Image (cartoon, rainbow, N blue to C red; front, side, top):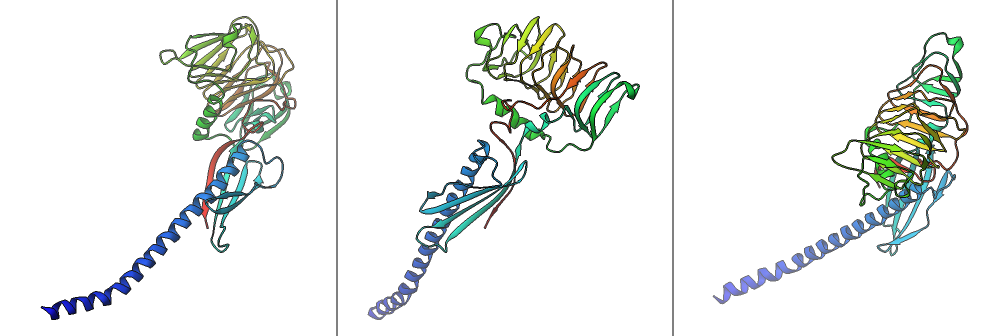
Length: 352
C-alpha cells in the first residue's frame, strides 16, 4: 500500500512541471491572441475614422491625407487616405502596440464613392441611349453609347455629342444607398400621409417625409417655395398652376415622377426618381435644375427653354422642339459628392 502511494506521488511529481509549463504557454498564447484582436480592432477604428472623413469631405483636394493619430487599446493608430481616381480612395490604417513597436497590424482598403455631381457636368448623360426628336437644340455635352438623331440632322443642334460608355452609374445596390442618403434628411418618425402635398402651406414645404402604405400616388402642387428635401415613398405627380420654386433643394421619389405644362417650375435644385421621369412643365427660368432617373428613363418635353442637366439610366428621350442649355452647375446642389460623399462600395479589405 505504501509502495503504491509512493509510486503515485512520484508520477505526479514528474507530471506537474510539464503540465504547469503547458498551462503557462497556453496562457501566453491566449494573451497574445487577445492583444492581436485588440490591435485589429484599433486598426479597424482607424479605417472607420478615415471613412467618416471621406464621407464628410474632410480630406479636401489633397491627393494624400494624413488622419490625426489615435490611441486605441494601448495602440498608436495612424491612417492615411490616398485619392487614386475621382471616385476611388485607398485607406491604409496601421496600429502599433505602444509597449512593443514590433507588434503591428495594418489594414489596406480600397473603396469607391458614389458621386452624382459628375452627371451634372454635361447636358445629357445615359448609359443606355439618347433619342433626340426633330428640331432639338442642345447646348452642352451629350454622352451615351448610343445617340439617335431623328429626322433631318441639319435641323437638330448638339454642341458636343460623345458616343462613349458612361462610367460610375449607380448599381441597384447603390440606388438603395441614394435613397437612404435622402431619407436621412427628413423625419421618418413623423411621416406626412395625405395624398396632396401643397407647398403653399408652411408645414408641407420640407423637409418632409411623405409616406402612406395605402397610397401609392401622391400629388405635389404650388404655388410655393420648397424649403427642404421632400422624400416621397411612392409615385409623384407635379401639377397644379402657378410657380413651384425648388429653392436649391431636392425632390426625391422612390417611384416615378410625372409633371404637366400647367406647372411653372423655377429655382435651382434636383428632381430625382428611382423609376421613370416624364417631364413636361413650363420651365422658363435660367436657374439650373438637375433631373435624374436612377434606374429608369427620362421623357423630356418641357414648355420653354430648360437650363440644367438630364440623366437617365435606360434612355433619355427628347421630344420634338426641345431646347436644353447646360451651364456650369451651382456648388450648392444637394447631391452625394457635393457637400458630402456617399460610400458606394468597399472593394477590398486586406489585413497584414
